[in-house]
Length: 214
Image (spheres, one colour):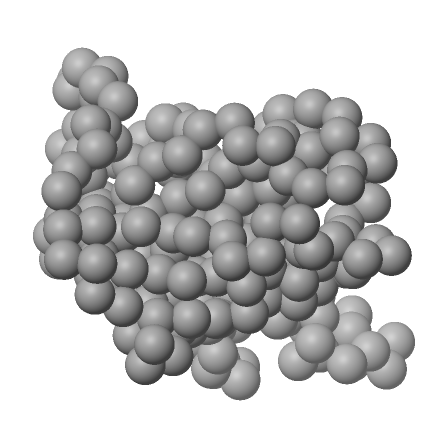
């Protein structure tokens, strides 16, 4: 079936590329590979041969089921990477990384509609993305929104910015959102990275900024 996901993930001073793909029926594995500077530092392969056979017997839509499993594996590896729980090759004895300081060439992620982002349980995020150093709009950057609570993460939508550095993300607010959860808007363009993080309340009238990382 040959489909997959690609994401750039910034962890402290390191930038990783996470790639997850279905190798197809001739090699029924869901493979996730983490790269750092072009070098493989982690790999996870999950066989779905038994699942495919069971799905065929039950008349399930195998493509849809595999897409969901692929998405779950991709984002689970990202969550573990960000939490520092993956055993990366070449970093077994490395000391814990210090928090990354804000850099002048990072990305400035702006929410253009802070007072109208939530309506009847539906989220509309109007995002503007610019380079922090030059204030120039960033085209074709990946912008992702997800809700995070403790160690659980619900990925909501991913899209690319237009020529003006703008993108609109629309999705229903996940049921896990509430007191203690955070809405995260994350952008990546090559080695450049930016993030907005908002705490959510049980019945929010607007997000309350918690931290901003660029």
